Structure formats: C-alpha cells, structure tokens
Picture 1 (cartoon, rainbow, N blue to C red):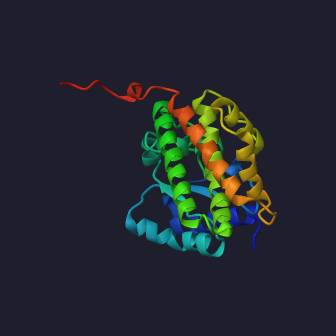
Picture 2: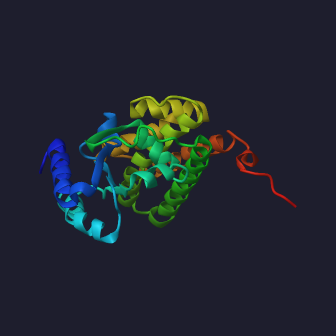
Picture 3: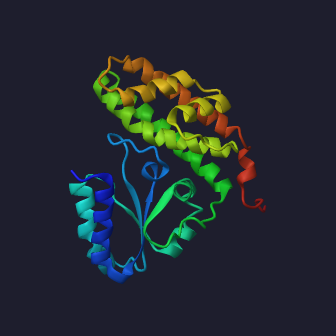
Length: 249
C-alpha cells in the first residue's frame, strides 16, 4: 500500500499525463490538509479543476479516477471548472467553506482561497444537512435496533460527517472551531446545550470499536444530543429572515 504522499503524487502524475493542458489544478482538502488526518478513518479528499468537463475530456481522466477509487480505496475526486466552482458557493456553502479553510494546492494555481461563501445560505444548508443526518440515523435505528454490530457500524460511519457539521455549527454561532475533535464536541455542547458526554461516547466508539460498549444507550444518547444541536441552530435566526424578497399579493 502506498503512503499518503506517494498516493497523492501518483494521482497528480496520472492526471497530468491523461488530461495534459486541460488540467488546471489539483487541490487536497479536508482532514489531510487540516492536520487531523486519521489513517484508519479519514479519506483523502481531492478537488480537480479542468478547463473542460465535456464527456470526452472526462473519459480521458477516467483511468486515473478508477485507479484512485478501486486500487487506493479513496473517494472519487470532485471535478469542476474554475467558473463552475466559483458559482457553486451558494448551493455548496458548507462544502466550499470547508474546502476554502482547509486545503493545499498539489498542482497548478489555487482557485479556492478567493471564493466568497454566502453565510446566510451556509446557515440554511447546515440545518438541512443536520436534519437529514438525524432522519437517517433514526431510520437505521428502527431497522437495526436488535443488531448492535450493525448499529455500531452506522454510528462509526456517521461521526466524521457529524463532526464536520458541528464545526460549521460553531461557525454559524460566530465562533472559530477548535482544532481537535474533543474540543469541537465540547464547544458545540456548550453553545447548543447538548450533552457533551453523549457526543464524546460516540466518538470513543469510533476510536475503540472493539471495546465492550452499550451501543443501544450510546446510540440513543447520540440521537438526543444531535436533536439538541438542531434545535439550537433552528432558534439562532427566525426563518422568515432568510426570505430573499417579500411576497407580493
């Protein structure tokens, strides 16, 4: 298995060979760029900027993407043109704010640093993502309440995205998210009134999955804590203030 740096270097080399002049930038983002990369649980997230995204151009780079996904078991890179990336900040506010604040250019220029993210739309997308996550976690519980192993897997898989959303909750509350996961949990609990111990217990399951956990109790408390976070965010700004224009009778 290649090292992290070797994998990234090989990906860039393959993209350069296949895309040639159509390749403008390759950007690493997420935990590997932020400095809290975990070998067992973290992914290598990559953003690729091409001059053209026409089907023939995508087909040329497909072998590099297939190698990255199949052989290296990493998530598919995101592909944008530079203009498309810039114009997507209203609908991908969370994602692009995250990329903007934790990224490193592996090849080419950096088109991310100057992106302007509309924070009112960030707030709306954040609540949507949290509510969607909560709904999915409840559905999994309904389907697997009598299968602790399956619940453990669901909880572990959810913690990375939930922690990302919690960092954005702190941003919505005009705070700078701390670097460590434990501190993110502590501050999120403090500003939303949720149970820090319940959130920490879920993180502990992720870090020590082989330990003897009371997964039903932990999962239930985890759900309740996320509910508290959603409620606090919902009350942060009245919904009517997000309307772009007043309705005309």
